[in-house]
Image (cartoon, rainbow, N blue to C red; front, side, top):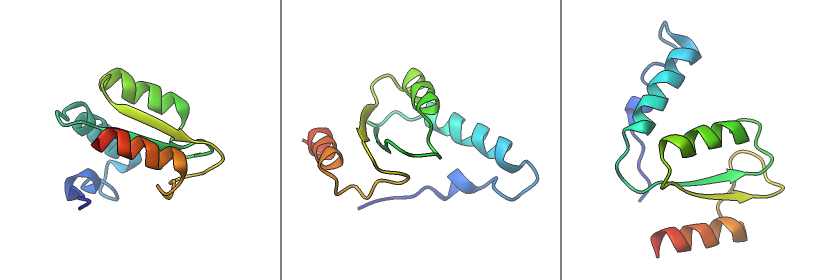
Amino acid sequence: MLRNDPATTAGVGRGGGMEEFEKTLAAGFAGLTCPVLLVRGGDSMLLEPETVEAMRAVQPAMAYAEVPGVGHPPSLDEPEAVRAMESFWG
């Protein structure tokens, strides 16, 4: 079952705008203590490689896979995504 934390979008559209939202999101990400898997579309214009590196610096144990030739978001049925999820969930 996929879950969504409504607090991740709490600041969007209220005063602080995108910069404040990104700070809130980054602080929440840094505080994660559960295993994390990031599957990025290799052609994504929303999740840049530099952002992935910053995420990996904050969460060095984060599992990561990139799906070449796919934008944002990957559909998660691509072979690279399936392999990453199978490995992550064992």
